[in-house]
Length: 93
Image (tube, rainbow, N blue to C red; front, side):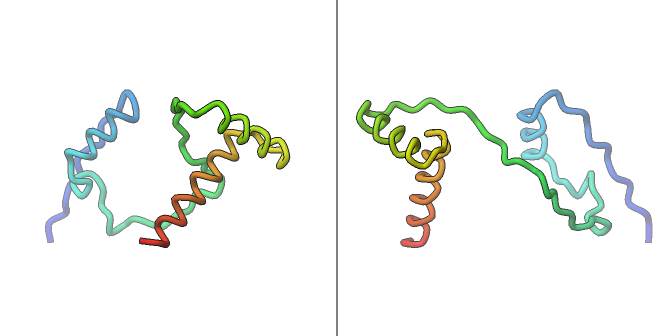
């Protein structure tokens, strides 16, 4: 059987450029998946993105009060509440 030659993966300037590349290209032309090994990244932090959100002032006050009771930053409490709400919605559907 003839050996398959893999194309070189180009260098990318940023994550967006890399995502666009992989959206348009088949990875099997660049990676021999038969030789791939399963790995785990123990200490990998999820990527975060900063967003802007408008909330009623009273909601923000309540959120900060609750976060203060729990001794956590209010942004962390927001993430917990959003995650819990999404998990509940997915269980309902």
